[in-house]
Amino acid sequence: MKATLQTSAERFERFIAYRIDPGIFFMAIVILSLNITDACFTQLIIEHGGWEINPFARAAMVTFGDNFWVWKHSVVSLAVIMLILHGHLRTARVCLATAACLFTGVNVWQLILIDHLSLFL
Image (spheres, helix red, strand yellow):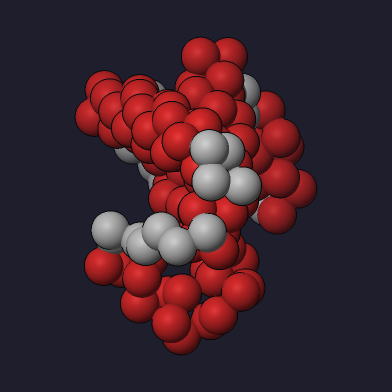
């Protein structure tokens, strides 16, 4: 095969032509949305006497204070972008689906905790 050099215009056109599978796009939106609600619920629970179980998140909270959610959202967003770019691989799709399920479980658990907090408010 003969190798050809792509012009920047050709690379740009190829990048624009890249289509994300609707299922992968939906999982990415779910993960990013639940990540934001997770950060908000975590703040609420901590303000009312709860604590963070995740040691990485706890370290980020100590380091970044009230703005830990910026770090958290950045890390998760970068991971989701990397998985989307490799969405043609089965492993990436499984990772996205697993993350969506885990974030759903964490948010449900936090809603249960917040419901129990309402007894003390």
